Image (cartoon, rainbow over all chains, first blue to last red; front, side):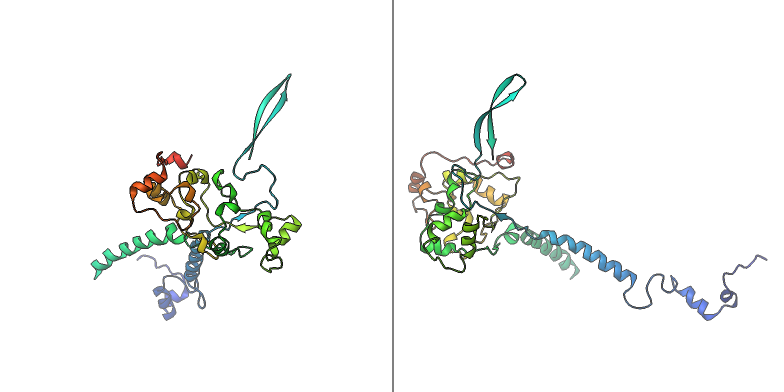
Length: 101
Length: 200
């Protein structure tokens, strides 16, 4: 005769609460809290807030345009200015055209 | 019933994305509140200021500048001197701190655009910006999307006008196509339609 293994006294005696525990997939509180918000609901809400948080990036960024108070002469916004200058290097001076945006 | 749902569901989803994800929905109608409630309807529509009085660089630069505070004060140091709404302008002129206007029309940085070429080609302000002379607050009227740009780049002539009329908000093309062609002048425009034309 093979041995009969048991895990709890309730199993040997085949009590009704052991029967009830067999019916459940998980012990009480392991999968769902006995009351209030359940673990699965929690995951659902966290997931939803995470995915909806991406939508906030859809809002148009507000960009400011800050013009001069008193524009300097000869400055045209968007048109670069060029200056002729020299760049001393080693024993020479190099002629340069400098672009200033 | 199930077959109907299978057909209708994707159709509605596609139509929804087509419209609600497009700049016609997301960008058109953008109307931020500016620090000073400057009314284009009053200044342009009623007083008849030319666009280029304030946006002076539009013909010679990539960008149409937002006027410096001084441009406002040219008139408003004598006109409406005590206006409550103009207080930020006066503060700016006195303190030297610039105005911080909110940008309405925004092209992405990866798209090259220059106002100069469009003005020289005879594209009116109203074509892209709408009836600014009727706006109390500036509102974006066109999607400024790539497809929208390309529509005109592929066939520019319906949106062209004589260069002298670019800032005219009420200009309508003459009925006679030949007359319009004569007004536009002989040289055809050749807007780029290849990628590197704008994404350079």
